[in-house]
Image 1: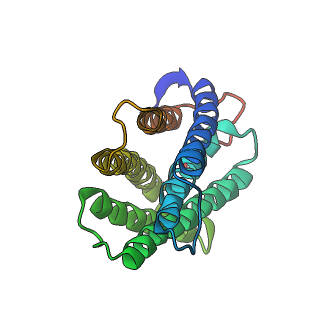
Image 2: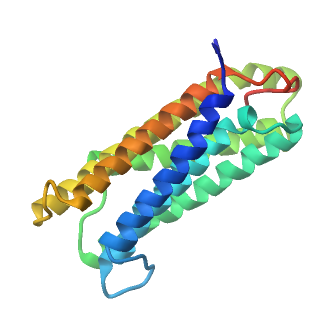
Length: 229
C-alpha cells in the first residue's frame, strides 16, 4: 500500500543526494586515494574503481531507475524504456565495479570472497541481474500476457525494493570495511579522509531511504498512466 503523501518531493531529494554522493565518492578516490585506473603498477588505483562504479552504478543509477515512474512526466511506455535502460546501466557498471575488485585482489595476491561484504555483493549483483532479465522478458520483450504481467507486478516491485535495500546495506558494509583497513594501516581516525568516507556512507543511506520513500508514495495526479514497474 502506498503512503498517502506525494512522491515528487522525495524524488527531488533523490536527485540532490545522488549528486552529493557522486561528488563525495569522486573526491575520496581522486583526491585522497590517488585516482582511478584499470591497469596500473599501483594496484590500489584499480580497486578505487570499485567504490566509484558500485555507488554511481548500482546505487545511483539503480535508484533513479526505481523512481523513474514517479519523477518523469512522460508516457508509460517511455518511462518503462527509461526504467529498463537505467537498470541496465546500473547492472553493467556494477559488474565492472565488482570485476575491478577481483582484478585488484588477483594482481595483489589478496584472497577473494572472504568477507560478509563480498558475499552480499555477489548475491546482490546476481539478484539484480535475474530481476532485470525477468523484467525485460515479462514486461518488455517478448512480454507476458496481461494476466501474467498483472500477477507478476507486485512481486517484481517487492523483490526490486528488497534487492535495492540489500544493495544499500552492502555498500554501507563496504565503506566500513575499507575505512577499517585504512585506519589499521595508519589513517587518522578523526582525519578529513575518515570523515569524508563516513559522510559518503551516510549520504548513500539517505539516498536509498529517499528512493524507497519515493517508490512507496503516491504518484503525481497528472500521471494517469502510471504503473510502478
